Length: 142
Image 1 (cartoon, rainbow, N blue to C red):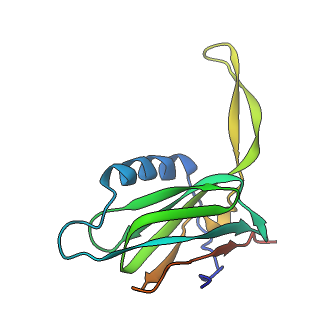
Image 2 (image 1 turned 180 degrees about the vertical axis):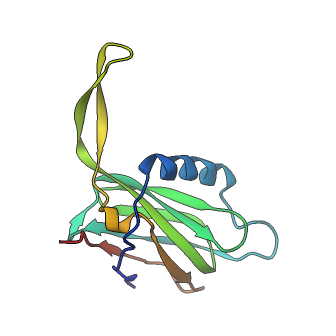
Image 3 (image 1 turned 120 degrees about the horizontal axis):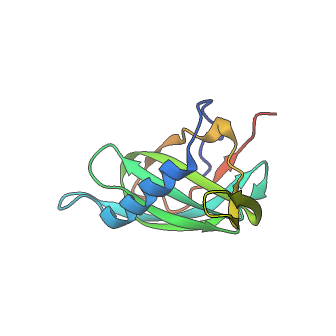
């Protein structure tokens, strides 16, 4: 199953998603008794190329949040609640870039954010009981 590859046009903060993912992993789960969950796996690509590194976060309309790392375009996320979920992404290149930390007078290697700006707001998906594979073919706005 493929999700819609249409991305929003709003800006995205990868720092914000990183913080959300960290919080989500702490809160991972289905939100308590009565919530049904599934394990979802698939691929995340940008312009048909696998995302080298990153993360994916599923946020349901109810309580909780869960996420997983993306490695070489692949992810496997457990405890994804059934129903409507908002999916957000963090995507980084395999290589890093050097920046100068002038406050501490040192060079630092930092990841290169490759998520197209148009995809920053994420997208909504409907998770069904039989949803086990969900691919996200993201497109840059060229």
